[in-house]
Length: 440
Image (cartoon, rainbow, N blue to C red; front, side, top):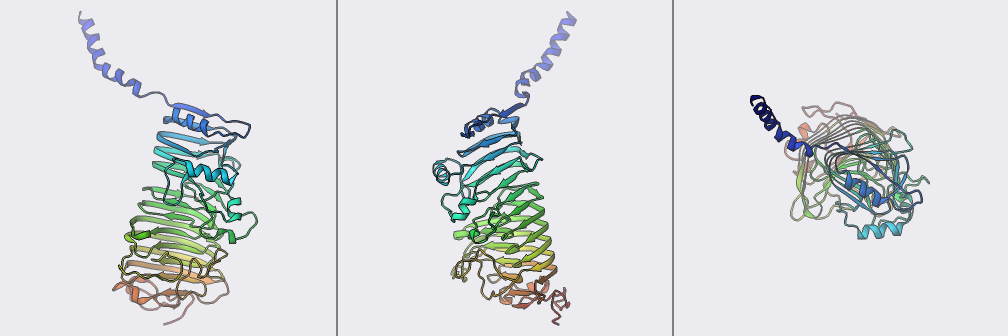
């Protein structure tokens, strides 16, 4: 009897754990099927993600998948996706436009995504083979036609604790989302630049908190990286951007008077080649909110039009009236260790309007630094160790209005705020005879 009671007692003690066992099922392994006749694989993709949405591994085989309709992949939790194949968007522009016009995918600030991905602890890992793990947007025909109507964003990756690695984005139609070891080829095959007008090429736009982007490589004609409203604790490091890139950017913030914020961002160890800007902050006239604790460090410029650029008027053309005196405030911006060369032109082939989309009052040539500020809106901004030269050997120039500086800012700014040669200042505000100028 004692033995029986003892067994019953032990069984009672483990019964609660036995009842919980069905909650901890073995992880699912799903292989995404595909057609071989060029027909739409989107239903099969959606079915696989629905079946394996929790505690799962989902694998795309080494094959060509046709995602001919937009897809929402939601409710994902603890999912690893291996993209060993390639995923193609439609090649027909009208087909894409119709699909975007009718999809229920949640739009982003800039466009509606072809793929909307939502969940937690989600990884998408591409193939180590350069020919696989690709998203092919077949976007060049859009650029060649200058067609911006109903352009889809490649993807929205709305994930907490996410990782994107070894993905390749080939000829996207508009913007894409990226992370680690990511390659973007948005350079037109014909080598022209006039088709990049007004952001016709993609960039990476990221509003999510606590993200690290490592080893990004891209050719594009819009922002290389754009950290936008809501971003916190973002590290963007070890990258390269070429072909008329619009820079390592914060914003734009505050369009139509919106209150938008960004905090704690580090851009480190980047090469910017043939770009319009190296480091860039942009907000709209009349915007509200703030951006704080942003650092650009160890930035190499190769024939860049403007090395460091701050504007509080993303509006095209001359500065508009600002009757409400509202502006997105900036604080604790640091620019450290910039080196390299400025190009021979203050813009690039994207400038086909008059005034140019990146017009700033007084600009007539390349500039090492442009601060286009509304009065008293920027505090604790510092520039240190900037060694950039123009391609023809002339002294580097600056556009900066000292009347727009907040009280006491000149003493810690690190260079003389004026329109003219770039002149480094020490902490006491004295010239150091460096940066292409011996002005005392």
